[in-house]
Image (cartoon, rainbow, N blue to C red; front, side, top):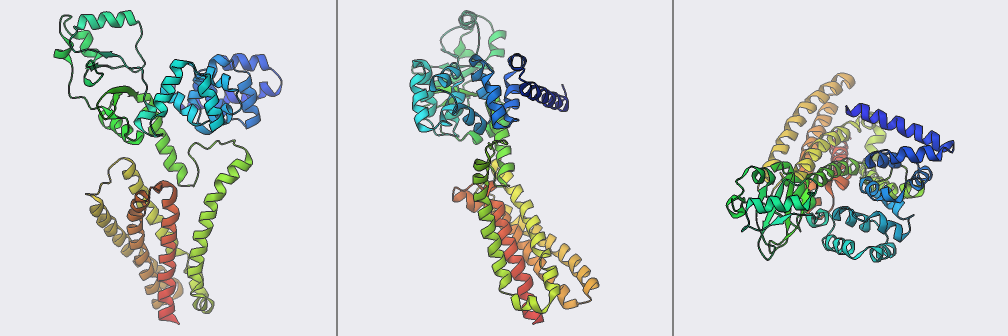
Length: 452
C-alpha cells in the first residue's frame, strides 16, 4: 500500500474515531481500536490532545496495553504510564521485549519505577535488571535476551530436532549462536546453512568463526552504523569476556536510525526529538523557553558589536541598510558546512586522521564562495550606490565572513563533541553568533576605518 494512501487512511480513521468519541459512541470506538494494529493505535494516541488521548486509552483493554506502549514515542508513553497504577504497568509490560521493558521503566519517576519493578514477576524483574545494568543508549540497553544457542559438538540433525521441539523461533532470527560450556561465543550458523546441510555434519564443521559481535558497552548509534554497513538482520551482543548476553535485531536498529535522524532535525530548532506534539502548554513553554533564552543572549551579543559602531551608523544610513547582508550570507554558508559535518559525524566518517583535510577543504570552499559573492555584491552595490569604496568594503566583509563560516562550520561541532555537548543542538546557534559577529565587525569596522 503506498505510504500516502496509508497516511490518508490513518488521518481519516482518526477523524472518524474522534467524532465517534465526542458523540459518546464508546462501544464503537472500543471495537475499532481493538481491530487496529498497535502501531495505528499509537499513531492515534500521539495525534490527539491529552484529554482525548486518555479517553481513548481508557477504552483499550489492558491486554493490548503492552504492545501499544512499545510503539509510542517516549514523551507520550511517559504521560500515559504516569496515569496508570503500578500493577497495571507491570501487567502491560509482561512478556515485553527486554529492551522495550527497560525503556518503559527508565521513563518512570523514581518512586513509580520501584513500585513497578516490585510488581513484576521474578523472570521479568531479572530481565529488566539485566537491561538496566547497562547505560542508556548503549547496545546492552537495547538488546534482547531471546537468543537460540547451540553447542559445536552436536550434529545438524540434532539441532533441527531441537528446533522442531522448540516450535517457534524469536522474531528476526537468521542465525543460531554457537557457544561453549561457559557461554563464550565461538561462532554462528545461519538458518540457510542449517537446513541445506547434511544431517550428520557437526556444527563445528559448519559454523562461521569470523563473527563480529557487538560489545554491550558500544553506543547504540555505532551499533546502528554497523547494521547499516554490513546489512545485518541480527547481531550478537557480548561482554568484555566475550560471553553471549543477547542479540540486537534490525527492527530495533531501524528505530534508532530514525530517532537519530529526528534528533538531528529537531535539535536544529532546539526541540526534543521525543517531544509530545500535544503536550501541556506549560511543559512545552518551559522546554522551548530555555533555547529561546540562549538565542536572545547570542542576538544581544551581535547587537553589542553593532553598538560599537553607532557613530558611523548614525552618519551613514546606507550602512544600516547593507549591514544585514553579510551576516545573513555567512550564516547560510556556515550552516551548510555545519549540517554536512554533523551528518558525517553521525555516520562515523569524521576521524582525527581526516579532520585537517576536512578543514582545509571547507576553507577553500569558503574562499571560492567568498570571492564569487564578494565580486557579485560589490558590483550590485557599486551600480546601486555609485560608491566604489562602499563596494570594496562590503566585498572585503563578505570574503572574511565566508572564510569564517567555513572554519566555524567544521570546528564548532568538533569542539562541542569534545565538550560532550550535542553539536546538532548547540552548533547552529554558536555558528550563527560567530558569523553575525565576524560579518558585522568586518563590515562596520572597515567602513569606520575608510569612511569616517
